[in-house]
Image (cartoon, rainbow, N blue to C red):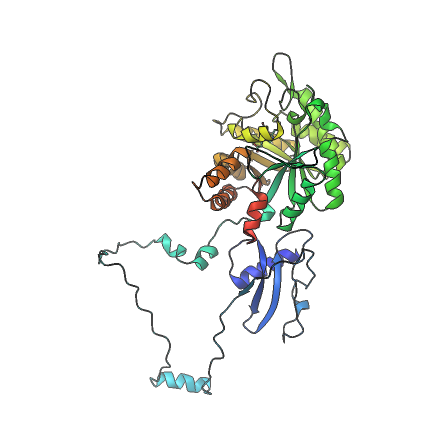
Length: 461
Ligand code: PBG
């Protein structure tokens, strides 16, 4: 709350873009009277300080205690200071020593004081057609003509608080690069992961989702390792919660990392994916993750009825407070390729079309939405992201629940590859793609760009 108010104050006073994390120091003039504060303002709900270095002693009438925000020592490490001045200082303005009445009388008598002239109209290049103005009243460009106007009318904002950072973990000590996802690693759960989480928190990303790479020897047709309380995921959750109690940990609920068949469910000998038997396993998996301290369990398996069953299983074990983010509209997409390489979780045979949705379908997402809502989902997710913006908008317009979009591995890798080949500006395309997901209606975005994008939004890169 403190940070939020502070953020609003900052934006009102500085007319900055609605970029929610402002990693800078600002000199703010309040009511034009006093330069009152040099502050570091970060719009993060957790663990962060709000105003740093507020010195109210030497600033006349300004009373820090009268503000809804109090000076506090930032718990963030000290950052580079960038001073943004809200106004230019041209020195004191000379006064003539006249009263208001004398000033008015002077103007009435025709002694109008001097002011700068109206600037001349800038010249157009020679050859520009003249007298060609079109008779139109509505000129939408008027509202776009300056950065101040553009930011005043910006409808959508992007903040590190919107990101959930997917992280791949493994049993190893080293971080292993993932070939198809430049910049992503299978992180050692004890070392690399903890460091990556610290980096993300440092720029306002305080939500992660874990994906484990499980040793082949622990995989089985029924994926029982998925609910081993001492398995990689529960162990990692306990470690992270011990270090960062306020970190929000999402978990993936599906059997594929644990299945010797590479499917999200149990496979019958004729290749049929068993629904209810799989749901039974998923409930155990979700409870095991909740027991370890997961905040949000996220069934990505697309079995029917799993949200309701998981809700009942969690509640029966006393985990009423644990949320469910349902992969409501998860499509059988080829954009998941790099992810399956990352986890070595390609289906050993067949595809996932009997449980994931047909990319050609739109209305069908409403059927999934109704089921998930009635079964008690807390967040509805659409996956992939950018090619499915219409589905994001569909869910947004048909449910009051928060909507998540998953910018999946293939989307990430395409932007990375385009950037490496210098075909596109990676950073700009990254930020635009994320903004577009927000514009389509996503509250949160699962993205492998979370750290990189948050750093950009903080002005670090
Ligand atoms: C599987 C799962 C997948 C992803 C997240 N969870 C792959 C799949 O369904 O085959 C894909 C994520 C990505 O591509 O980034 N439960």
